[in-house]
Length: 325
Image (tube, rainbow, N blue to C red; front, side, top):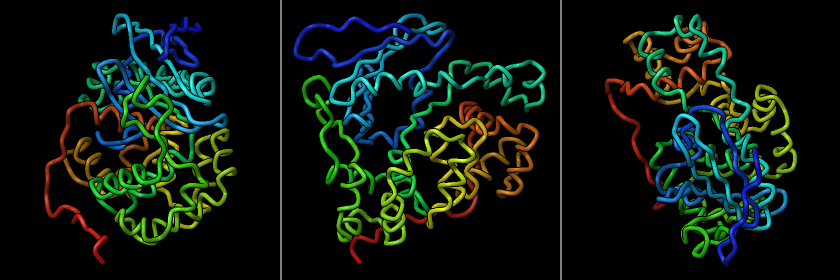
């Protein structure tokens, strides 16, 4: 890991870093799970890299990540702007999966225990890492918005609230894409009036969960320093946050290799169909994944990269719009 030379000029970053993964690495495959759809205002993809905007303890930051060199051994170049630039680049190696160790998963004896489809998918996708943002609130709020609604509804609500109450990312329109946004701070989220949540299509229960959680924002952020299982357990002490929400958060904040989103509307049926050819429920999914305890989230991610698509049976969840009521 070496500090990159900073270019001169108006668009020069405030901090920069070069990180070498030490093997195959796919930037977009690794960080894709952090993006809440193609319209996510806090994550943008351009021809010159992947852009993220977020708040650090030192202030807001814009981060640009780009891979250079051969795919088998790339270098990731990170450049950051804003008051939080130094903090942002310091966290880059962990964000990119430095601590995510697939050694045990990739042992031939372990791969031999997996269904052939999964083992082959891993052999074709050795460049995947599980990211770890360390930013609890950035993951928690959009995850709460996804509770018990369709992805379309949740992402529509998140975009509305971001454009209404977020702030322009440092360097937006100059060094960074003009439409890059930083999430509201906890204080800003807490000041959003009830009618704006309603306009966003967020019901009172989800809005109240966000408010309840962010009243203890400092305590929430400290969860990033705890082991993933302990952080997930503490999140579930907050009314309105259950197993599914906590799992979705620590998958992103801690890069947890074992966390499973029990209660997901589609996941159990998807995993069951992929591993056995038959749909199953949450209990069945956990039984199927039990032989790979410690790596269950890795198994799910690799299934997702296999190209497998679950057959569609029965009705889909209905998209509802509460904004006119």
